[in-house]
Amino acid sequence: AQTVTQSQPEMSVQEAETVTLSCTYDTSENNYYLFWYKQPPSRQMILVIRQEAYKQQNATENRFSVNFQKAAKSFSLKISDSQLGDTAMYFCASYKNNAGNMLTFGGGTRLMVKP
Amino acid sequence: GAVVSQHPSRVICKSGTSVKIECRSLDFQATTMFWYRQFPKQSLMLMATSNEGSKATYEQGVEKDKFLINHASLTLSTLTVTSAHPEDSSFYICSARSWGDGPNSPLHFGNGTRLTVT
Figure 1 (cartoon, rainbow over the protein chains, first blue to last red):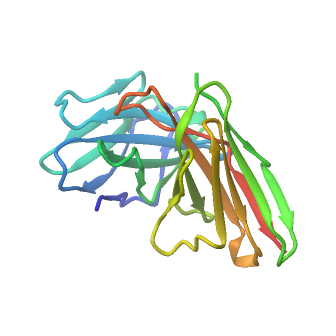
Figure 2 (figure 1 turned 90 degrees about the vertical axis):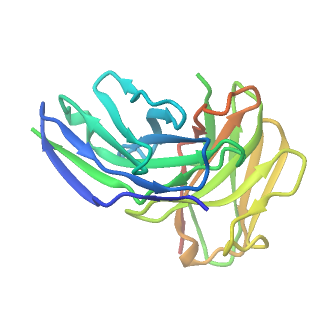
C-alpha cells in the first residue's frame, strides 16, 4: 500500500516570499508518479505540478518547483514569489503506474499568503 | 482541456431519502472514474473506482449498498447515496481519466458536490 504524509497542517507566508511544503511517501514500487494539487476555497482540485519517479530532474512549473529526493521518499513543493491567489489547501498525491491511476492523497497543508 | 462536470454542486435532502450525483466527462471518454469523499478540513478519501460497463470497486469500509455507483457509458458515472443520514453529509468529488491518456497524466476533477442531510 502507498501512504502519503504531509506533516504541516497549516502554513503562512508573506506575499512575494518563498515557502516550502513538505511531503513524504511510502511505497515499495519502483515506478510511480507524484503530484501536488491545489484546492482553493472553490473546492476545485487544480494540478500544480507532477513528477515521475524515474526522472531525477526536479519538475518546475513557473513559480512552483519540487525537491524530489527518491531515496528519502520526500517530495516537497516550493512556491516562489508567493501571491495572494496561492492561498489554498495543497495536497500531495501519488499513484502507481499499474494501479489504475488511483490517487492516494496526503492529509493536506493549508497555506495562507498574507499581504 | 479535459472537463469533468459534476452535478449538482449543492444538495440538501432529508434523512432517509436518496440522492444521485452525476459525473460527466464533457469532451473525452473516461473508462475509469473515481469517487472521493472529503470531510471538512480533511483530505480526499477514495470511496470507489468506477469502470464503464462493470461493477465498481469499493474501498474497504465503504458500504456498496449505501453508495451505489453506476458507470453506464464512457462519459457518465453516477453516485447514489441511498437512505441518506446526517453522517453522510460531506463533500463528494469525482475524477476521471481519459481513455487515451498516458500513465503520468493527471486525473481530471469535477467541481464537487456538497451534500447536506437534515
